[in-house]
Amino acid sequence: MKPDLPFSDAPEGSNIPDEFNRVIDAHVHVFPQKIFGAIWNWFDDHAWKIRYKISTKDIFNHLLDRGVSHIIALQYAHKPGIATLLNQYMAVKINEFQGKISGMATVFPGEPDADIILKQGFKLGLTGVKLHAHVQCFDMMAPYMEPIYQICSDEKKPLIMHVGREPKSEAYKCDPYEICSAQMLESVIKNFPDLNICVPHLGFDETRGYRFLLEKYDTLWTDTTMVITDYFPMKESIDLSKYRIDRIMYGSDFPNIPYEWDRELKVLARSELSKEQLDHILYKNAADFFNLPTC
Picture (cartoon, rainbow, N blue to C red):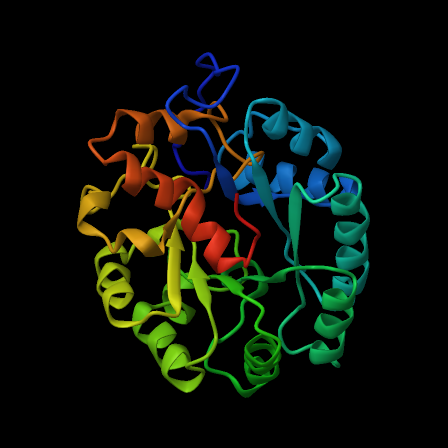
């Protein structure tokens, strides 16, 4: 059954808010067009209507032309055997934009030679790794995850791992509430103390638990993607001033969103966060996590 989630055709801004002079979007999705089409159909049937159904090149141009300084491009392999092609696609696309895009590699957890696939992706210039537990249905504590954690740790590559329990869908092949939890993620952090991890969406729907983990571990980050926009029903309101401000990154989830591209930026612009706090969220923290050169 499709959730009753709204679509917004509210006007979009032509640029980032005037008070923001530098923005890294740490959560942007790109895929080859055929895979993108399948993902958009899935969202139409099981989640929300996507507002921006555009190509990878148009995605990058859309954000850069509107003042975004740098983009972190994410992908995930939904089945074994396609990660190498996805990584090659990502490398080609980011190279077209001369340092303005950082692309994340992917792998399907448990597939043969996962460590080799990632090493090849890193040689292509990819910055880190993106995994999505809801789609890939992995157990983050399983032995097959250890090569992924170890190679990222050894090569000092960050890992973005969607292991928050929401947004949940009956259309997934596994129950995110059974394989995702802040407690399980904490075990990974303890076992791989040199591994830098980002859990997107503030760990939705365990936002409180992940907020506490951020205070305990210097190797954990999170991003704001879609959870500060009042789009999803939330157990608790999000007050970013109560978070460890040097561990939160801005992300849009563009283009797979049901509202205007700058909705989240507008929320941040209206917030009572200081200019310094906003610069951490919008730029500095992502630059640190992804090891980007700063100006």
